[in-house]
Amino acid sequence: MVTMKDVAKAAGVSTATVSAVLAGTSYVSPALKARVEVAVAELGYAPNSMARSLKTGQSNLVGLIVPDITNPFFTAFVDRVQAEMARNSYAVLLGISDNDTAREAGLLGLMRSHLAAGTILCPAGEAERYAALEKNLGGMKLVLADNAAPHGASDTVIIDNRGAALLAARHLISNGHKRIAAMLGPRHRHNSAERWNGFRAAMEEAGLALPDAYVLHGAFREDEAHTEAATLLGRDPLPTAIFVANNLMLIGVMKAVAERRLRVPDDISIVSIDDFAWASAFQPALTVVRQPITAMADAAVMRVIARIQGDQSPPQSLVLPPELLVRGSTRSLHR
Image 1 (cartoon, rainbow, N blue to C red):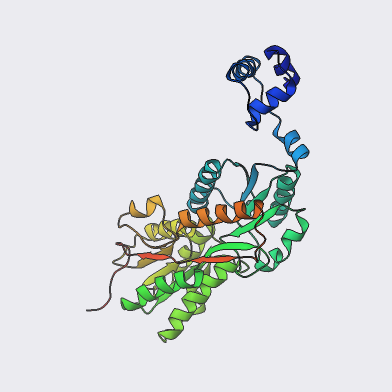
Image 2 (image 1 turned 30 degrees about the vertical axis):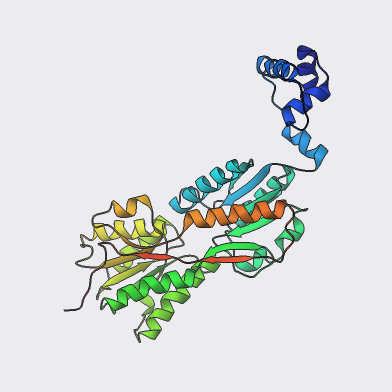
């Protein structure tokens, strides 16, 4: 392995000069700087960031842990976080928990062992699990995004999940739908529970019945949602509309609808939380409640960098508003 001493020898300078050139911390004459840069290029030298972090107690590494990289929401979130971190001279170490809280805990330990200055975590578990998590991270800063309860022990960046479900359900109700089914996510997750609370509140305020057979649990996964939807669509009477609590479950629902040869929205209306590239490509284009992914990612980046740079203010909770996008998958039953 090429060392800084090797570079100094090849350039005919001291290791202090090499260090100064690489770090840009002090003036080095153009001639000496050029010699160092040539030696670095010829030898293929790469600074040992881990050793530098151990020496200085500082790191430009930030962790990012998400539960499911196949979900377009998290794909977009990761892409934006990585871009913003790079713009702020931080590198991102990505971990994927696969919705497994034990794996998530191991990934947090991995981030800490790599001296990550901070980590943005999209939790896979229930809110109580993260109440005092930062105390066990050895000074590594933590920001929770997406599935997090506000006003906890860490900074949080979320959307108004209850409000998102209210938007979707009220849209269906205002269009005359009374038999509305709900495809829900995991019961233990805060964001899923809030979406269920919002949907149920909209139904209650409209005085509409909600049969147990119309309350489905797709675990935020395509396959589970497909199975649940196939069972629902085999019942009589059919619901006139389905509220779907995330994008992967929406794909499973749409597969089940196609298998039953039902037409959207003529036979059944569909509205979902989460916008994604395919939503407008479906025929008809899908009515969705959009989450502000870019704003969420930017806010999470801003908070973790602020903490790394010494912000010691009380934990902050940012709740961003969702947006209803009415397209072709819902129709009015009013005559």
